[in-house]
Length: 322
Length: 281
Image 1 (cartoon, rainbow over the protein chains, first blue to last red):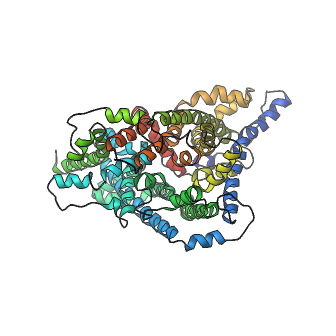
Image 2 (cartoon, chains in turn blue, brown):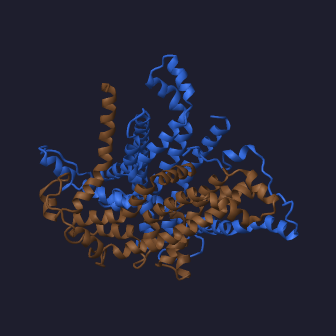
Image 3 (cartoon, rainbow over the protein chains, first blue to last red):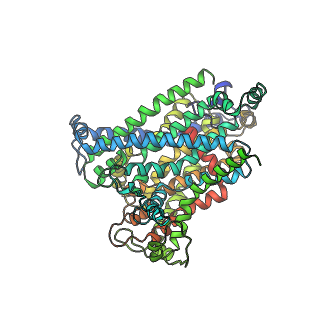
């Protein structure tokens, strides 16, 4: 359960030099040696080819499609950046982009705060820690569709939370965010944080457990208080975990499609639209393939814009020795 | 107990209740009648529990135009998830073995290039994929979905197995080579027998991912191969007629049952998959 973030080679490969292809001493036959040299590559090649075609090739095809005038049917004559111009002129696209910004920022912020807070609380030698941890984490086993369906019912203004508060005597309590165009995107944050914050807790807890005890004991001997120890020593040493968590959360946020589909379906109207839903609807229900492809490329660009700097900082941090 | 500790426990239990509340609400709502739902409130304990909503959700509820309940889609998901999980895990295992113990020039570049498959938003590949499946006659079939899940699952499974196999000492593999064991013999006799824990992680992670997937299901599933997530979404978001919250909640639990059961039985491996997945980002 180590939370060592990945850099391409992985920690173990950095030190020990491995013989790349070492000829078997006793296998005798030249065929055996040849087989051992080529079998590994042969075995890996279908995966490499699949990756070249289905990841890199398909990204290239989508990029190509985004530069054509494709509507219902794909056309393959390049036509410049017209689709991107159309995309940027659509209010709906900017609504979706702004919603992603709101959702992403709040989702990441709350998940980080709740996850780290819970991890620190659970780190205080708690009895029944296992049971509590299991309870905090179980939403992660559910699909976003199930989470969305559950919260859609709870946040339903007529019968859910609002009615419960009325029954309890708070007659003026209103909570109609789900049907309020200005607030609908925040209900997505509520459900998303409920689903993912336990997972962040698990990552931080694993990180906390790997902090060197002797440093903490030394600080205690020096008379530092527990909050100070956490603030000055423990949390700074969680830097690599922060990076992992940020990467994952940003990734979940940018791809978020199912949760919004199940909870608000992008509504009321298009008020809680996000790029993933925009892409789906323009590509598959509105027959605007070129525009859909352009929006997909914008999503890829967003992922790269967030992930590449994070990965770069992370590997740089790793090189300078954490 | 010191007041500070007491506060700490109170807080932790309160948070636990918050995480459990939606599950409680789902369960209780699913056994209430619609009348009871309208009269009572969200947290009321069901007074006259009934399984009617469950049987309707399973075999009669309408998802879009069809009214056969969730059952056919539940089995679609099973037919999709089981082969996809097994095949992607096996391929990942052999790939991981190569990447960890049979280095060749450029293996790091290959590994990094494969890992990109974990990072991309799938929206950027679904349009060409839809066309390819259409041309191959696999559009709207379970086989097509299995294929898609295998292709985009391999990056994850390769990562899991590779990171596990690098912990197998090189000496073990090299000694076997000196004794004349070839590529596949070493895999069969040394690597595979050590792999049970990581196969568990891979099975559970992949099953959860594939069972819970919505995007591929809604785009490539068509009417006949729709997985249960898509059917549940259609059921919950049907705007015609009275919304039967009890049926919706029963359906949601049915759709969640396999992954919840796995989490309860093998939570340890699930968490390992999560953290390993997080390492990948």
